[in-house]
Amino acid sequence: MNFDGGWVLPNFGRNPALIGDGGTTVVGTGAMNFTGPTTGPGLSVVYPPSGVMLPPNTNSMEFHFIPGAGQTLFRFTFQAPTTTLVVYTACTPVGAGCVYTPDPTFWSSLAAYARGTTPVTWTVAGVNGSSLGNPIGTSPVQSMGFSEQDLRGGLYYWNSGGSVERFDYGFPTSPRQTYLSPANVGGICVGCHVISRQGNLIVAGKNAPLPTAGYDVRIVTTKAVSSSMTGPLTGSANFFSFSPDEQHLLTSTGTSISWLRLIPGTSTTVTTQGAMPDWSPDGLHMVYARPGFSLPFGGNVGVSTASLQTARFNGNGFDAPVQLVAAGGQNNYYPAYSPDGQWVVFNRSATDRSSYANASLDPNDGGIPDGQLWAVPAAGGGALPLGQANSAGASSWPKWAPVKHDYVAGKVMWLTFSSSRPYGLRLGAYQKVQLWMVAYDPAKAANGLDPSFPAFWLPFQDLGSDNHIGQWSTDVPRSDCVGSGQSTCGQGEVCVNAKCRPG
Image 1 (cartoon, rainbow, N blue to C red):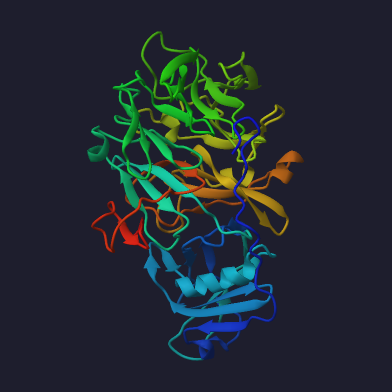
Image 2 (image 1 turned 90 degrees about the vertical axis):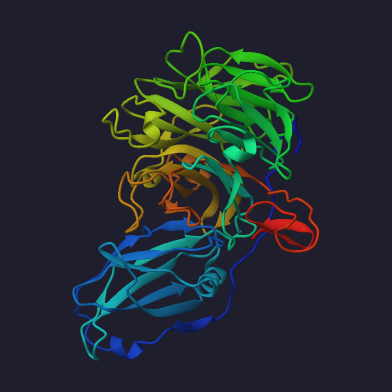
């Protein structure tokens, strides 16, 4: 990374699909039961949505469906360009239907032949398995695409238990970790957090969501405090953004934004009416939400009637702001630069609901969240909605994974966001806020087309928790350790080859 010359996207190399005749792989028994007429009742696929795009190293994927009357045995058929995988399974009941989860070997075999190629097509068929010759019912044909490269980096997110969880895509079959907890930081609730792009530093508030005077900058490997509000970094904040070189930090109380030089630790107010800053990957700009009004003192947990503005960093401060997206009677908030710096994704409330109230269903105000995902060129221009990503329900806190991948039609980037939309048969609407992910095609956006694909649920989460604010880093630096086991590593980690890694 060159702070003056721009952020260099990590290059993990091409990883093309296997070619040649992969044949047909069959898992389980039951083929003899599927020899009857195809006149049985059809099945309904509930999840995943057809057309979804996935990183190949997604660690798991559930398939949710509603069987036809009397069906007890099911056949999944996945057709990749050069291989077919078939599995026979009984119903694992969940709610009003069934869930099938491929085992890791089956799933990785499918991804190996499908990464970066034309989408996999798949169906699920059902039959009464008590005897032979019974009518067969089949679902409509579904599709599912894969990018060519595996996803890498770390995802840090807040759960409603008050901690920051971490998932390392370098170890996609390992469980998530509790990375920071109130016990670690000496606070009530560790919520508002930001990780630097390289992943070496993290800043976290101690009493989320309030912008109380309590946050620390910590070294990721050791969790040791490198800067604190009790030292040179004084004041309050609940929104943050690191510069690409990890030498500067933008903080916000939800009302005003300050620029902190981490060394030597001096602070300058950038704007007295701004929140939710994000530093561009090239280090030369910030984007932020400008609320329609600001409190005369203190801070705020959210914004209303907000526009989006950008300001250029000149090395000694920030130039006068330029409007990127006008309020226009709406609320525009949570802006974030794409990893190539060309796009800004943000939330929009068409009814001007507060960003805080719009993060989840609020029984106190009787309102329904209406936050939608939108994108706008970082250099200015017309904004467009992410139609397919928005179709399943409201969203909040969009954040980019810091990579760009190849797929069959070009390039995609990845977005995570929080949503209380239904998750198949597992969760109904507004039951829990969970993290979702969606692929974004910048070439489509440049042509004014919907750049999004259908979104998918991130499979390492706790369904019993509300999960928010997914923050990405290009790497997860690991502490040195001695021996094996957990004795010299943190919670949820083990020592392997002198490095702590997820257990």
